[in-house]
Length: 415
Ligand code: SF4
Ligand code: F3S
Image 1 (cartoon, helix red, strand yellow):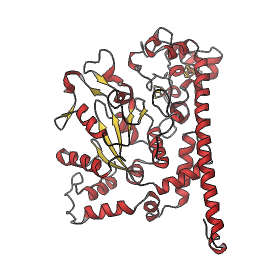
Image 2 (cartoon, rainbow, N blue to C red):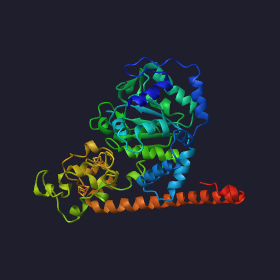
Image 3 (cartoon, rainbow, N blue to C red):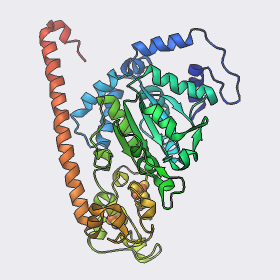
Image 4 (tube, rainbow, N blue to C red):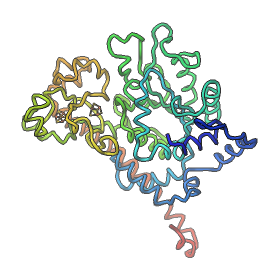
């Protein structure tokens, strides 16, 4: 995080920047901040900083295209974003490696700084927050109290349950305890990364800590799973922007993943697919086939049974993704990917037994899965597009009604 970001956060929290003295306490700082938050929405806030309406449109157009939404949604999304209040987010990290936070900090749109200070209010995050110890726990409780029923809880990492949950504790309390307390008044919970979504590495056989995914412990709140090891940064920021724009969670698949990002398999959109269809497979990582860019199926690629956006969105601002770098997909956004029998063994019905009958069947006919999931995603997206078109029509007709009732000289000033 940049010094500028730390400085800004430090001014808001009264904490010292690394290597510097704490800024002098401002008596009325808290009151001022609260008053500002009361009147501010995102549109006002960005306007204050000299950003135009066009900025919203550009960002909304980008996010809508990432989520495969129709261009007509852009205006609705931009208008909703402009009206949105800063979303309070409490980020809990449990049994994890910090890779998900590392991934988020590499988001290209919006940048981390924009995301934290313009789109969300990151009120608690072990790795990024300036405060520590009791002050950190107070910040979490304060955010929960001030934003009761409205804040979002993001969790990375699985939760150990064996021996009363003693294998991961924060501030003397188990992860189970902190999770249950924090989600109680949350609007929604987002499990980022495969550990939070499906248990991940800690859950892998023999699972010594009794790790479980968040869905095992949170049953009465809307839950979005954003799996991946780690998840793609723009999948995280795009999902948050959607919630911020529309005040609801996006349409999900049967594993609670947003369909717009997880509706298709890697195999559906892989640029090596023409080689798969022609039966041209690399047999080793340094043979002629590998050099010619043939399909990596026989080297263990799990693309046919893995749902994610890597093949289209790619990583690091659209630079590349594992298959483009010459390695098969490990299946990192699917449940139990560590226990699928070996990263370098080709997908087979035997390997996929653990993943349930749907995937096992589809592994035998990989192309059928690709076609089927694409069809399912299109069905869901079709339904979703119709809903958004209706919103757009309603917004346009209400605008037309307003402009009819205005004197003509006023309507010229519009836009
Ligand atoms: Fe691409 Fe893997 Fe499918 Fe081959 S098996 S087409 S490398 S996703
Ligand atoms: Fe993971 Fe496969 Fe993408 S290993 S990063 S889902 S290509």
